[in-house]
Length: 164
Image (cartoon, rainbow, N blue to C red; front, side, top):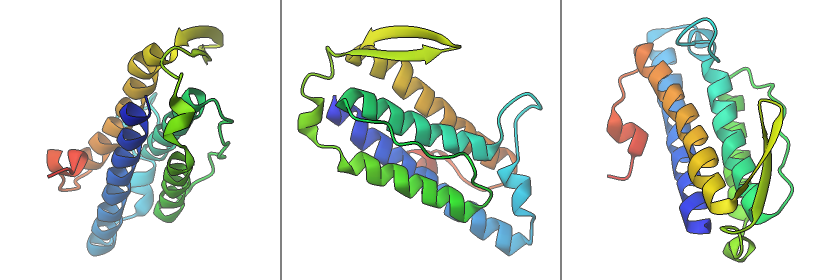
């Protein structure tokens, strides 16, 4: 469970941090308003780019904490700049790296209780990771990527995957 979660979350959060650096450089080079990117959304009823980054971090740390059987650190959603989003990503990756493989020894079979739409649900750890944790994490990272691309940042699949 450790290998299927921690390295994956850390890798894609680091890729997201790299996308933020590219975005900030693009904004500075083109003399654009950073808020145009930070507050971008695909549709008026959807979350902003900033919220997508916050939620990607939240799903990475929350899923990992539940699987490891440790407290989920709380990070207030108060970021208003690229630097603050970078700090949030760093805090999340630091938390992920603090977790040890041994903490995940029984995670696949451990009962994980969580709330969806105000209702409590319980799944085995393996099912929680594959059907809740990873899909939600990828959704928010992908949406953040899509918002940047939609707003003119010249990025491609290699920037998203970044293993090549």
